[in-house]
Length: 282
Image (cartoon, rainbow, N blue to C red; front, side, top):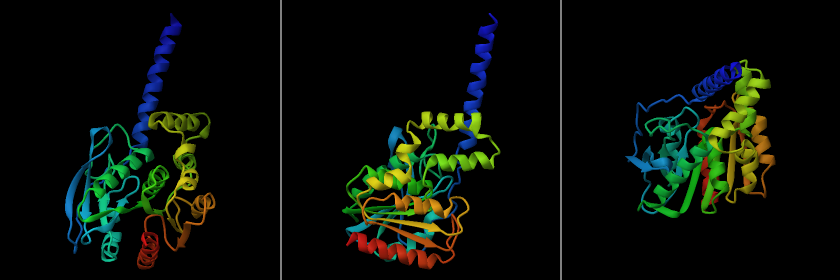
């Protein structure tokens, strides 16, 4: 019965490998230490998929105003998106800065993924539409990195959004994963290929189906793709790749000095965001 022992050991080994993959790819949880300053705001909890709840800050801008969901990136939280809050609120936009599941102060779940970020964006939009301070016919999304990819995925399945702003999105999850494999000195064959296949099986989506370079062609509303020219996490060529895959003329590309998380002139970036949003919401 040596083969039974072999199969048992093989199954144990695969189980240990899968657990190691999950742990290695899990997002770090960074909890907010501050809060919005200089603005009226309230802390909120809202329901999302799988019976979980999300933490967020709602920042109104008056009565019946257009509103934006603001979604952070992998390992981020709502506080990291606060530099956008004051200027966008001053421009007349109500904001919901929200933590995705497994991030910040939101509930945990079995795993985080780009499609689950998109589910949380959908949940945040549904919550926003019910608020008396919000014009439910004037909703948009601002997302960063994975949150940007999720914003494009959510928008590709909806017809009710007025605008999407994508900040530092990667073009394809497989390309991003292969960069991670190289950084971890993990050979693509056979281990890296197994990791990519396993991740797709766990999240329940093929990378091709959720890649921003694919979903962008199905987004009906205006989109602004913003990317830092010195981004070393996601090369600027990927922003150009997403833009090249657009359908129609409503997708704009804005390249700025800066990195993945910081733009050299945040004031210029925010001013361009406001200009785009004002045109889209008109």
